[in-house]
Image 1 (cartoon, rainbow, N blue to C red):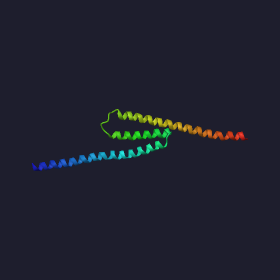
Image 2: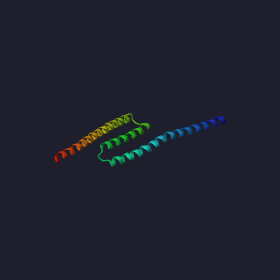
Image 3: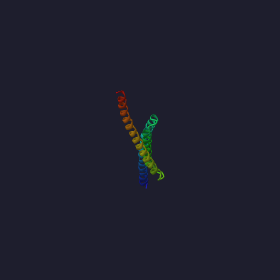
Image 4: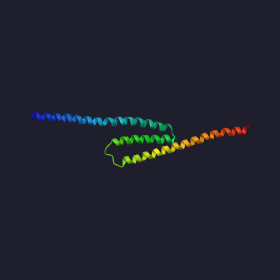
Length: 128
């Protein structure tokens, strides 16, 4: 009987340590992800604040922040089922909006480039 009691105590000790190690090993990736996401979040927020009026940068930065938030929420348990799909839809719409603003910015750059080319030629015609 004392031998059986010792085995039980050792098994509790070993399994208890394994459970603590597995809990610590599951917390470490989440903590490191939170640290990286926090650094990205702050840097993206500074980019947004520094580039007021650039809708491409604003929407793209917010989409990246939402992406990092979703990656964190995937690791969490106990969330309602509707949360991740709704955030995924929001992320998709933000990506589409970013691409739309990027397209508009490209069109405006092409128009501006064409108007710059046309302006000097008309002034040369007036002089001659």
